Length: 448
Image (cartoon, rainbow, N blue to C red; front, side, top):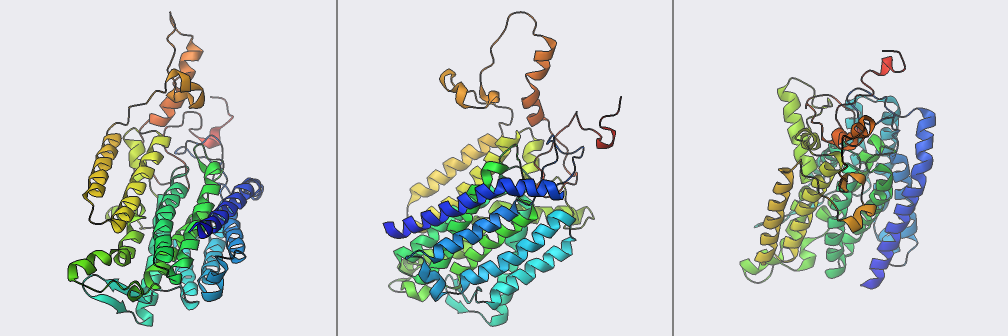
Protein backbone atom coordinates (compact mmCIF):
# COMPACT_ATOMS: atom_id res chain seq x y z
CA UNK A 1 0.00 0.00 0.00
CA UNK A 2 2.81 2.40 0.77
CA UNK A 3 4.51 2.29 -2.62
CA UNK A 4 1.51 3.44 -4.72
CA UNK A 5 0.84 6.20 -2.23
CA UNK A 6 4.42 7.44 -2.55
CA UNK A 7 4.11 7.47 -6.34
CA UNK A 8 0.89 9.43 -6.20
CA UNK A 9 2.40 11.82 -3.65
CA UNK A 10 5.42 12.38 -5.90
CA UNK A 11 3.15 13.07 -8.87
CA UNK A 12 1.09 15.49 -6.80
CA UNK A 13 4.18 17.33 -5.54
CA UNK A 14 5.70 17.66 -9.01
CA UNK A 15 2.42 18.97 -10.42
CA UNK A 16 2.08 21.47 -7.58
CA UNK A 17 5.71 22.60 -7.88
CA UNK A 18 5.54 23.16 -11.64
CA UNK A 19 2.25 25.03 -11.34
CA UNK A 20 3.54 27.19 -8.50
CA UNK A 21 6.85 28.04 -10.17
CA UNK A 22 5.28 28.86 -13.54
CA UNK A 23 2.51 31.06 -12.17
CA UNK A 24 4.89 33.96 -11.52
CA UNK A 25 6.29 34.09 -15.09
CA UNK A 26 2.77 33.55 -16.45
CA UNK A 27 1.61 36.58 -14.47
CA UNK A 28 4.31 38.71 -16.06
CA UNK A 29 3.38 37.34 -19.48
CA UNK A 30 -0.28 38.18 -18.90
CA UNK A 31 0.62 41.73 -17.90
CA UNK A 32 2.83 42.14 -20.97
CA UNK A 33 0.10 40.91 -23.32
CA UNK A 34 -2.63 42.92 -21.63
CA UNK A 35 -4.67 39.89 -20.54
CA UNK A 36 -6.32 41.58 -17.58
CA UNK A 37 -9.70 43.21 -17.01
CA UNK A 38 -9.81 46.91 -16.25
CA UNK A 39 -10.78 48.10 -12.79
CA UNK A 40 -14.41 49.10 -12.62
CA UNK A 41 -16.53 50.71 -9.92
CA UNK A 42 -17.92 47.32 -8.84
CA UNK A 43 -14.45 45.81 -8.21
CA UNK A 44 -12.47 46.03 -4.98
CA UNK A 45 -8.97 45.14 -6.09
CA UNK A 46 -6.78 48.22 -6.24
CA UNK A 47 -5.04 47.44 -9.52
CA UNK A 48 -5.86 45.45 -12.66
CA UNK A 49 -5.26 41.76 -11.96
CA UNK A 50 -3.98 39.57 -14.79
CA UNK A 51 -5.67 36.36 -15.84
CA UNK A 52 -4.26 33.40 -17.83
CA UNK A 53 -3.40 31.46 -14.68
CA UNK A 54 -4.65 28.40 -16.53
CA UNK A 55 -1.41 28.37 -18.53
CA UNK A 56 0.59 27.39 -15.46
CA UNK A 57 -2.06 24.87 -14.45
CA UNK A 58 -2.00 23.21 -17.87
CA UNK A 59 1.77 22.79 -17.81
CA UNK A 60 1.41 21.38 -14.30
CA UNK A 61 -0.99 18.80 -15.75
CA UNK A 62 1.52 17.91 -18.47
CA UNK A 63 4.32 17.59 -15.91
CA UNK A 64 2.21 15.35 -13.68
CA UNK A 65 1.29 13.01 -16.53
CA UNK A 66 4.92 12.90 -17.71
CA UNK A 67 6.25 12.00 -14.27
CA UNK A 68 3.52 9.41 -13.68
CA UNK A 69 4.30 7.69 -16.99
CA UNK A 70 7.85 6.95 -15.76
CA UNK A 71 6.92 5.64 -12.30
CA UNK A 72 6.86 1.88 -11.89
CA UNK A 73 3.48 1.69 -10.15
CA UNK A 74 1.74 4.16 -12.44
CA UNK A 75 3.25 3.42 -15.84
CA UNK A 76 0.75 0.59 -16.32
CA UNK A 77 -2.02 3.19 -16.46
CA UNK A 78 -0.57 4.49 -19.72
CA UNK A 79 0.11 1.01 -21.10
CA UNK A 80 -3.27 -0.56 -20.39
CA UNK A 81 -5.52 2.47 -20.89
CA UNK A 82 -5.88 5.26 -23.40
CA UNK A 83 -7.65 7.50 -20.91
CA UNK A 84 -4.62 9.69 -19.99
CA UNK A 85 -4.14 10.53 -23.67
CA UNK A 86 -7.84 11.21 -24.04
CA UNK A 87 -7.75 13.53 -21.04
CA UNK A 88 -4.71 15.40 -22.36
CA UNK A 89 -6.33 15.87 -25.78
CA UNK A 90 -9.57 17.22 -24.36
CA UNK A 91 -7.74 19.37 -21.81
CA UNK A 92 -5.49 20.91 -24.46
CA UNK A 93 -8.47 21.92 -26.58
CA UNK A 94 -10.51 23.43 -23.76
CA UNK A 95 -7.39 25.15 -22.39
CA UNK A 96 -6.65 26.76 -25.76
CA UNK A 97 -10.19 28.10 -25.99
CA UNK A 98 -9.89 29.40 -22.43
CA UNK A 99 -6.66 31.23 -23.22
CA UNK A 100 -8.28 32.91 -26.21
CA UNK A 101 -11.27 33.86 -24.08
CA UNK A 102 -9.07 35.36 -21.36
CA UNK A 103 -7.46 37.57 -23.97
CA UNK A 104 -10.23 38.32 -26.48
CA UNK A 105 -13.51 37.62 -24.58
CA UNK A 106 -15.09 34.95 -26.80
CA UNK A 107 -18.85 34.54 -27.13
CA UNK A 108 -20.52 32.22 -24.63
CA UNK A 109 -21.93 29.98 -27.40
CA UNK A 110 -18.44 29.50 -28.83
CA UNK A 111 -17.17 28.35 -25.43
CA UNK A 112 -20.16 26.02 -25.06
CA UNK A 113 -19.42 24.48 -28.44
CA UNK A 114 -15.75 24.07 -27.50
CA UNK A 115 -16.76 22.29 -24.29
CA UNK A 116 -18.90 19.83 -26.23
CA UNK A 117 -16.14 19.24 -28.77
CA UNK A 118 -13.60 18.62 -26.00
CA UNK A 119 -15.93 16.05 -24.45
CA UNK A 120 -16.39 14.46 -27.89
CA UNK A 121 -12.63 14.22 -28.33
CA UNK A 122 -12.34 12.30 -25.07
CA UNK A 123 -15.23 10.03 -26.05
CA UNK A 124 -13.59 9.20 -29.39
CA UNK A 125 -10.46 8.06 -27.53
CA UNK A 126 -12.31 5.81 -25.10
CA UNK A 127 -13.00 8.04 -22.08
CA UNK A 128 -16.73 7.50 -21.94
CA UNK A 129 -19.46 5.94 -19.83
CA UNK A 130 -20.08 2.34 -20.92
CA UNK A 131 -22.52 1.20 -18.25
CA UNK A 132 -24.28 2.43 -15.16
CA UNK A 133 -24.86 0.56 -11.89
CA UNK A 134 -28.49 1.16 -10.95
CA UNK A 135 -29.63 0.26 -7.40
CA UNK A 136 -32.18 -2.54 -7.43
CA UNK A 137 -31.50 -3.37 -11.07
CA UNK A 138 -27.78 -3.98 -11.40
CA UNK A 139 -25.51 -3.08 -14.30
CA UNK A 140 -27.21 -1.41 -17.26
CA UNK A 141 -25.21 -1.34 -20.49
CA UNK A 142 -25.45 1.86 -22.51
CA UNK A 143 -25.48 2.18 -26.26
CA UNK A 144 -22.81 4.24 -27.96
CA UNK A 145 -25.12 7.23 -28.38
CA UNK A 146 -26.40 7.03 -24.82
CA UNK A 147 -22.89 6.87 -23.40
CA UNK A 148 -21.74 9.75 -25.60
CA UNK A 149 -24.64 12.03 -24.69
CA UNK A 150 -24.31 11.27 -20.98
CA UNK A 151 -20.56 11.88 -21.08
CA UNK A 152 -20.89 15.19 -22.93
CA UNK A 153 -23.65 16.35 -20.58
CA UNK A 154 -21.59 15.56 -17.47
CA UNK A 155 -18.51 17.33 -18.87
CA UNK A 156 -20.44 20.47 -19.87
CA UNK A 157 -22.31 20.67 -16.54
CA UNK A 158 -19.15 20.22 -14.46
CA UNK A 159 -17.13 22.76 -16.46
CA UNK A 160 -19.82 25.42 -16.17
CA UNK A 161 -20.43 24.67 -12.49
CA UNK A 162 -16.76 25.27 -11.71
CA UNK A 163 -16.71 28.31 -13.98
CA UNK A 164 -19.71 29.86 -12.24
CA UNK A 165 -18.24 29.43 -8.76
CA UNK A 166 -14.99 31.16 -9.78
CA UNK A 167 -15.96 34.54 -8.36
CA UNK A 168 -13.77 35.11 -5.30
CA UNK A 169 -10.05 34.79 -4.73
CA UNK A 170 -9.10 31.15 -4.20
CA UNK A 171 -12.71 29.91 -4.22
CA UNK A 172 -12.78 27.72 -7.34
CA UNK A 173 -9.28 26.28 -6.84
CA UNK A 174 -9.95 25.47 -3.19
CA UNK A 175 -13.35 23.87 -3.77
CA UNK A 176 -12.07 21.76 -6.64
CA UNK A 177 -9.07 20.73 -4.55
CA UNK A 178 -11.41 19.55 -1.78
CA UNK A 179 -13.51 17.64 -4.31
CA UNK A 180 -10.42 16.07 -5.86
CA UNK A 181 -9.13 14.97 -2.44
CA UNK A 182 -12.42 13.22 -1.64
CA UNK A 183 -12.51 11.60 -5.06
CA UNK A 184 -8.90 10.46 -4.76
CA UNK A 185 -9.63 8.62 -1.51
CA UNK A 186 -12.65 6.95 -3.06
CA UNK A 187 -10.89 5.98 -6.31
CA UNK A 188 -7.80 4.70 -4.49
CA UNK A 189 -9.99 2.49 -2.31
CA UNK A 190 -11.67 1.01 -5.38
CA UNK A 191 -8.36 0.43 -7.13
CA UNK A 192 -6.13 -0.81 -4.33
CA UNK A 193 -8.75 -2.12 -1.92
CA UNK A 194 -10.64 -4.11 -4.54
CA UNK A 195 -7.61 -4.59 -6.88
CA UNK A 196 -9.48 -3.17 -9.86
CA UNK A 197 -7.02 -1.67 -12.35
CA UNK A 198 -9.79 0.19 -14.18
CA UNK A 199 -9.96 2.67 -11.28
CA UNK A 200 -6.27 3.59 -11.58
CA UNK A 201 -6.72 6.37 -14.21
CA UNK A 202 -9.33 8.16 -12.10
CA UNK A 203 -7.02 7.97 -9.07
CA UNK A 204 -4.20 9.50 -11.10
CA UNK A 205 -6.41 12.27 -12.48
CA UNK A 206 -7.58 13.22 -8.99
CA UNK A 207 -4.00 13.37 -7.64
CA UNK A 208 -2.87 15.59 -10.52
CA UNK A 209 -5.90 17.85 -10.09
CA UNK A 210 -5.05 18.31 -6.41
CA UNK A 211 -1.50 19.29 -7.35
CA UNK A 212 -2.69 21.84 -9.91
CA UNK A 213 -4.99 23.53 -7.40
CA UNK A 214 -2.50 23.46 -4.52
CA UNK A 215 0.23 24.96 -6.72
CA UNK A 216 -2.00 27.78 -7.90
CA UNK A 217 -3.69 28.66 -4.60
CA UNK A 218 -0.74 30.57 -3.02
CA UNK A 219 -0.92 33.05 -5.92
CA UNK A 220 -4.73 33.20 -5.95
CA UNK A 221 -5.62 33.59 -2.27
CA UNK A 222 -6.99 36.96 -1.21
CA UNK A 223 -5.68 39.39 -2.28
CA UNK A 224 -5.06 37.55 -5.55
CA UNK A 225 -2.05 38.36 -7.67
CA UNK A 226 -3.45 36.47 -10.65
CA UNK A 227 -6.76 34.93 -11.71
CA UNK A 228 -7.04 31.50 -13.29
CA UNK A 229 -9.52 32.84 -15.85
CA UNK A 230 -11.54 30.59 -18.12
CA UNK A 231 -8.32 28.87 -19.19
CA UNK A 232 -8.01 27.53 -15.65
CA UNK A 233 -11.61 27.11 -14.50
CA UNK A 234 -12.70 25.18 -17.59
CA UNK A 235 -9.55 23.07 -17.43
CA UNK A 236 -9.98 21.91 -13.84
CA UNK A 237 -13.70 21.41 -14.44
CA UNK A 238 -12.95 19.08 -17.34
CA UNK A 239 -10.41 17.07 -15.33
CA UNK A 240 -12.88 16.71 -12.46
CA UNK A 241 -15.52 15.46 -14.89
CA UNK A 242 -13.04 13.08 -16.52
CA UNK A 243 -12.25 11.51 -13.15
CA UNK A 244 -15.93 10.89 -12.46
CA UNK A 245 -16.54 9.50 -15.95
CA UNK A 246 -13.56 7.18 -15.74
CA UNK A 247 -14.57 5.48 -12.52
CA UNK A 248 -18.34 5.63 -13.06
CA UNK A 249 -18.54 4.11 -16.50
CA UNK A 250 -15.35 2.07 -16.74
CA UNK A 251 -15.31 0.05 -13.50
CA UNK A 252 -17.39 -3.12 -13.92
CA UNK A 253 -19.59 -3.62 -10.83
CA UNK A 254 -19.53 -7.38 -11.37
CA UNK A 255 -15.77 -7.33 -10.70
CA UNK A 256 -16.48 -6.47 -7.08
CA UNK A 257 -18.64 -9.59 -6.65
CA UNK A 258 -21.15 -7.73 -4.56
CA UNK A 259 -24.38 -9.11 -5.94
CA UNK A 260 -24.26 -12.19 -3.77
CA UNK A 261 -26.06 -13.28 -0.60
CA UNK A 262 -29.25 -11.69 0.70
CA UNK A 263 -30.78 -8.54 -0.74
CA UNK A 264 -29.86 -6.52 2.37
CA UNK A 265 -26.24 -7.67 2.31
CA UNK A 266 -25.98 -7.01 -1.41
CA UNK A 267 -27.43 -3.51 -0.97
CA UNK A 268 -24.87 -2.55 1.71
CA UNK A 269 -22.04 -4.15 -0.22
CA UNK A 270 -23.08 -2.33 -3.41
CA UNK A 271 -22.62 1.13 -1.91
CA UNK A 272 -18.99 1.42 -3.09
CA UNK A 273 -20.30 0.88 -6.62
CA UNK A 274 -23.46 2.96 -6.42
CA UNK A 275 -21.64 5.87 -4.81
CA UNK A 276 -20.07 7.04 -8.12
CA UNK A 277 -23.60 7.97 -9.16
CA UNK A 278 -23.78 10.30 -6.16
CA UNK A 279 -20.18 11.32 -5.41
CA UNK A 280 -19.57 13.25 -8.68
CA UNK A 281 -22.68 15.25 -7.83
CA UNK A 282 -21.88 15.77 -4.16
CA UNK A 283 -18.34 17.01 -4.77
CA UNK A 284 -19.75 19.72 -7.03
CA UNK A 285 -23.07 20.04 -5.19
CA UNK A 286 -22.56 23.68 -4.26
CA UNK A 287 -21.25 24.79 -7.69
CA UNK A 288 -24.05 22.82 -9.38
CA UNK A 289 -26.69 24.41 -7.14
CA UNK A 290 -25.19 27.80 -7.93
CA UNK A 291 -25.36 26.98 -11.65
CA UNK A 292 -29.03 25.95 -11.52
CA UNK A 293 -30.03 28.97 -9.43
CA UNK A 294 -28.15 31.31 -11.77
CA UNK A 295 -29.89 29.91 -14.86
CA UNK A 296 -33.32 30.17 -13.22
CA UNK A 297 -32.62 33.67 -11.91
CA UNK A 298 -31.37 35.04 -15.22
CA UNK A 299 -34.11 33.41 -17.26
CA UNK A 300 -36.76 34.71 -14.86
CA UNK A 301 -35.35 38.24 -15.23
CA UNK A 302 -35.39 37.99 -19.02
CA UNK A 303 -31.60 37.72 -19.32
CA UNK A 304 -29.42 35.23 -21.11
CA UNK A 305 -28.43 32.21 -18.98
CA UNK A 306 -24.81 33.04 -19.84
CA UNK A 307 -25.04 36.69 -18.70
CA UNK A 308 -22.74 37.41 -15.76
CA UNK A 309 -24.27 38.83 -12.59
CA UNK A 310 -23.61 39.24 -8.89
CA UNK A 311 -26.27 36.92 -7.51
CA UNK A 312 -24.10 33.86 -6.92
CA UNK A 313 -23.94 32.14 -3.56
CA UNK A 314 -20.57 33.61 -2.65
CA UNK A 315 -21.85 37.08 -3.53
CA UNK A 316 -24.83 36.52 -1.21
CA UNK A 317 -22.42 35.75 1.61
CA UNK A 318 -20.70 39.09 1.03
CA UNK A 319 -24.06 40.79 0.81
CA UNK A 320 -25.13 39.70 4.28
CA UNK A 321 -21.92 41.00 5.80
CA UNK A 322 -19.26 38.28 5.61
CA UNK A 323 -15.73 39.33 4.74
CA UNK A 324 -14.04 38.07 1.60
CA UNK A 325 -11.87 35.53 3.37
CA UNK A 326 -14.69 34.28 5.58
CA UNK A 327 -17.04 33.81 2.61
CA UNK A 328 -14.41 31.64 0.93
CA UNK A 329 -13.82 29.59 4.09
CA UNK A 330 -17.56 29.01 4.53
CA UNK A 331 -17.81 27.70 0.98
CA UNK A 332 -14.81 25.47 1.69
CA UNK A 333 -16.50 24.15 4.82
CA UNK A 334 -19.74 23.16 3.10
CA UNK A 335 -17.92 21.60 0.14
CA UNK A 336 -15.77 19.48 2.44
CA UNK A 337 -18.73 18.50 4.59
CA UNK A 338 -20.77 17.27 1.62
CA UNK A 339 -17.92 15.52 -0.20
CA UNK A 340 -16.24 13.81 2.76
CA UNK A 341 -19.56 13.08 4.44
CA UNK A 342 -20.68 11.15 1.38
CA UNK A 343 -17.31 9.42 1.20
CA UNK A 344 -17.47 8.36 4.85
CA UNK A 345 -21.00 7.03 4.42
CA UNK A 346 -19.91 4.95 1.43
CA UNK A 347 -17.28 3.25 3.62
CA UNK A 348 -19.36 2.74 6.79
CA UNK A 349 -22.98 3.01 5.77
CA UNK A 350 -24.23 1.18 8.87
CA UNK A 351 -22.64 3.58 11.38
CA UNK A 352 -24.96 6.18 12.89
CA UNK A 353 -22.00 8.15 14.18
CA UNK A 354 -21.29 9.41 10.67
CA UNK A 355 -24.80 10.79 10.35
CA UNK A 356 -24.61 12.43 13.78
CA UNK A 357 -21.24 14.04 13.00
CA UNK A 358 -22.53 15.38 9.68
CA UNK A 359 -25.62 16.81 11.40
CA UNK A 360 -23.49 18.43 14.11
CA UNK A 361 -21.12 19.97 11.57
CA UNK A 362 -24.09 21.20 9.53
CA UNK A 363 -25.38 22.98 12.63
CA UNK A 364 -21.98 24.61 13.11
CA UNK A 365 -22.04 25.71 9.47
CA UNK A 366 -25.44 27.30 9.89
CA UNK A 367 -24.22 29.16 12.97
CA UNK A 368 -21.28 30.51 10.98
CA UNK A 369 -23.66 31.73 8.31
CA UNK A 370 -25.68 33.64 10.90
CA UNK A 371 -22.67 35.38 12.47
CA UNK A 372 -21.30 37.59 9.70
CA UNK A 373 -20.34 40.36 12.13
CA UNK A 374 -18.44 38.19 14.57
CA UNK A 375 -14.66 38.58 14.28
CA UNK A 376 -12.61 36.15 16.35
CA UNK A 377 -9.65 37.57 18.23
CA UNK A 378 -6.43 35.65 18.64
CA UNK A 379 -4.78 35.35 22.08
CA UNK A 380 -1.95 37.72 22.88
CA UNK A 381 0.79 35.15 22.30
CA UNK A 382 -0.49 34.35 18.79
CA UNK A 383 -1.11 37.88 17.53
CA UNK A 384 2.15 38.01 15.63
CA UNK A 385 1.10 34.98 13.53
CA UNK A 386 -2.34 36.18 12.39
CA UNK A 387 -3.56 39.02 10.12
CA UNK A 388 -4.07 42.42 11.80
CA UNK A 389 -7.88 42.16 11.74
CA UNK A 390 -7.69 39.22 14.19
CA UNK A 391 -5.52 41.06 16.72
CA UNK A 392 -6.86 42.77 19.79
CA UNK A 393 -6.98 46.53 19.50
CA UNK A 394 -5.10 48.49 22.15
CA UNK A 395 -7.22 51.20 23.73
CA UNK A 396 -5.55 54.58 23.95
CA UNK A 397 -6.47 57.40 26.33
CA UNK A 398 -7.91 60.53 24.82
CA UNK A 399 -9.17 61.08 21.29
CA UNK A 400 -7.27 59.24 18.60
CA UNK A 401 -5.64 61.21 15.80
CA UNK A 402 -7.83 61.71 12.79
CA UNK A 403 -5.43 59.91 10.46
CA UNK A 404 -5.11 56.90 12.74
CA UNK A 405 -8.84 56.62 13.30
CA UNK A 406 -9.39 56.73 9.55
CA UNK A 407 -6.82 54.05 8.79
CA UNK A 408 -7.52 51.59 11.59
CA UNK A 409 -10.88 50.24 10.45
CA UNK A 410 -10.10 50.54 6.77
CA UNK A 411 -9.52 46.82 6.21
CA UNK A 412 -12.56 45.66 8.16
CA UNK A 413 -14.75 48.31 6.56
CA UNK A 414 -13.79 47.24 3.07
CA UNK A 415 -14.49 43.61 3.79
CA UNK A 416 -17.83 44.06 5.51
CA UNK A 417 -19.67 46.58 3.35
CA UNK A 418 -22.69 44.79 1.87
CA UNK A 419 -23.19 44.92 -1.87
CA UNK A 420 -26.37 44.78 -3.84
CA UNK A 421 -26.86 41.63 -5.90
CA UNK A 422 -27.59 41.66 -9.59
CA UNK A 423 -24.62 43.68 -10.83
CA UNK A 424 -22.88 42.06 -13.74
CA UNK A 425 -19.31 40.93 -13.30
CA UNK A 426 -16.61 38.93 -15.01
CA UNK A 427 -15.45 35.43 -14.31
CA UNK A 428 -12.62 35.59 -11.82
CA UNK A 429 -13.56 38.95 -10.27
CA UNK A 430 -12.23 38.80 -6.77
CA UNK A 431 -14.93 40.37 -4.61
CA UNK A 432 -17.61 42.98 -4.44
CA UNK A 433 -17.91 46.05 -2.32
CA UNK A 434 -17.78 49.81 -2.24
CA UNK A 435 -14.63 51.32 -3.69
CA UNK A 436 -14.18 54.91 -2.62
CA UNK A 437 -10.87 55.45 -4.36
CA UNK A 438 -11.81 54.27 -7.87
CA UNK A 439 -15.38 55.38 -8.34
CA UNK A 440 -14.79 56.38 -11.93
CA UNK A 441 -11.72 55.12 -13.75
CA UNK A 442 -12.04 57.75 -16.49
CA UNK A 443 -11.73 60.53 -13.95
CA UNK A 444 -8.72 59.06 -12.15
CA UNK A 445 -5.99 61.63 -11.71
CA UNK A 446 -8.20 64.61 -12.55
CA UNK A 447 -8.74 67.33 -9.97
CA UNK A 448 -12.07 67.19 -8.16
